[in-house]
Image (cartoon, rainbow, N blue to C red; front, side):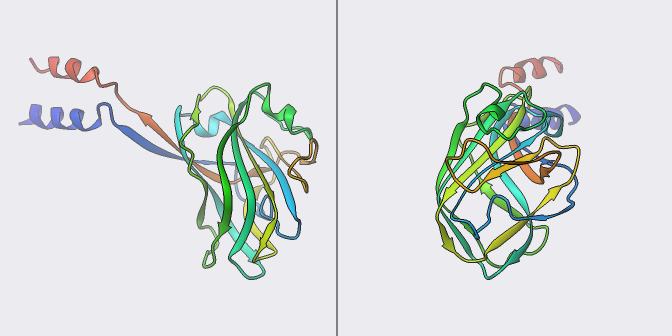
Amino acid sequence: MKKVLILLCAAFIVGGAIAAEHIVGGTGYTGNTLPWWGSYTAMRFQCCWFKSEINESGAVTKIEYQFHSYSGTPPSTFNNVKMYLCHTNLSALTSTFATNYGGNTPVLVWSGTYVIPSGLSQNDWVIQVQPTNFTYNNVDNLLMEVTWEGFGGGAAADYFWRSNASQPGRVYATSATATTGTLYAGQGEVARVTINYTAVQPSSLGRIKTLFK
């Protein structure tokens, strides 16, 4: 009976994708409006998370920011939004957006109109993007870039938690096409990154079975 249970457990996990959630960006220090700051008409924003905070290779299937508070009346709508992910070997961001890619090419993972809903409470996780085309290598750090043009109305500012030190930094400009921006060194965007990975290769099932012959 014990053998059967072990085999059933092995068959359940072999070749299956497992979703692992990773809290990144450090310890929340205060709420900050970046990148969803409706007082402006456009934004370019980058943040970065350390490889050591993720420590898992696989498809990135969800990135969420941790909500802090509203300033104004939601929901908030942002137009012409583009979100990118990029591997980077930089451990500290600079004020130059292209430099922060670390020589790699950013991948467009979503575009469209983004809405921050009403009814959120402090510390809720809010989906930013659910990519289908980016695989994290667990070698480099992970950079996220958000651009938008045109505030469609709602809360003048939507605050999300950020940390204050020991992170790669955050950089922004009030133009979606800016080449340089204002750098907040050491800060981090508190987020939850979901990685899908395969625990055991399908070919391993036969090897597991042989253990019980």
